[in-house]
Length: 305
Length: 254
Image (cartoon, rainbow over all chains, first blue to last red; front, side, top):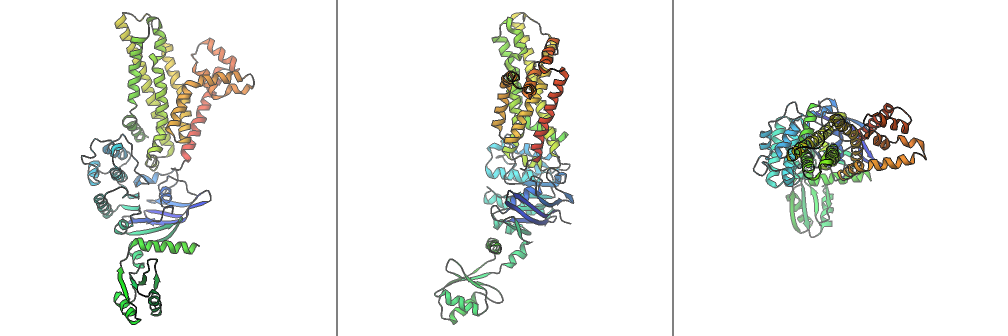
């Protein structure tokens, strides 16, 4: 049984379709990356599932209970950090923890959580949140999302404003909590981070879910490519097509040959030699979430057009 | 509800420091009554809470304006609403806390006034007058009841425009301009009869209510009906205003 489930959720802002029949689910203990370009509908979907926004049609359920706008009893076990940390400027970090833990039947040990999220140091102490840096606020926002011992944590751009060391610490924390059974739904433009963190991926574009699968499956769709620059790219493309290879040119004057069925840099070199084309540069591109996402998004845009 | 009230209290103390208002409302009448008000004006000084009445009114504006707008401004409205509580519970907890804070600031002003009177007496040997406690306390209770109307307007504005500045401004303008607007509308009644029942006129008349026969008759003459009907209309306006404010809050996506 899914922990969170969105079924055919749609939302219009006037004539603009922000969410178009969106369906996906989050299983217990899984880390799900919600990916898409700006304005794709990620934050709208997050607001719908956290009971903050009325949606036109569809259903959202969390922990076997319906989540509706203004009827959000189910949300006691969901933590969230949407868009930016919800912080009272005159509260200290500890005040925030106490405040947000108050309405939980069962909450984390506040001091332990502060230590885990790195908001217990001398930088925090008795300082009021209005004096925190963006990164400190972000850490506090994540701690707030975790304080009520949630089953699911919804994080919108959690790495925003964090330095590389903090990113690494937060990543480790999310992984640790996920191992303990807490599910995460994370939206981020830091695709490298998501690639390392997420078990599953939901890609959303122009309000529609265009792909939902495991991260491993998604990445395996993207075959490694051999990038080659030659003295005569047209001849190289023709020869590659004749050999039945999947091939295209990019805007950097490179020929991209999909490394599949025994195609590798050596085979490409051999083919170039056979047709008397000089190879100026050759490299094998590794599988990359960003590149594959761009490909998937442009395919989706093309399909719509 | 208990948890929501505890959280509102924590915000009142740590975030909004409402006690600063209570402190000013306590100290101001002591200073005013002991140093600025001559013996023959002491009684007037007591009834105006030694000048702290205006502090209480401004505090009421700020406290009520901040309660919703700061949640929108800080983004804390999201975790506030994305919880197991209904929006009605959240709304009611906020109203209760506003009224509670207001009563504390008012009480502080009353205590400051009494302290000022005591100090004046110690310095001068006598205040030259005595307080008639019944009308004095009746005035304070009426203040609380009339302020419910004022809160409703400020809360309505703050929920509509989500701007602290606009809500505070409306509050302050209302606290000084209600009687002016009521006077204008009272004048205009001769041109259009139903105008006498507009909420500001009703509020202005009731705020002068002291339960005495002369004033009751004046009110009955103006409205052409019993005083209890005027009270019923006032309560009706209160219910409508709070209901309308709640509906705006209840329907707002954040």
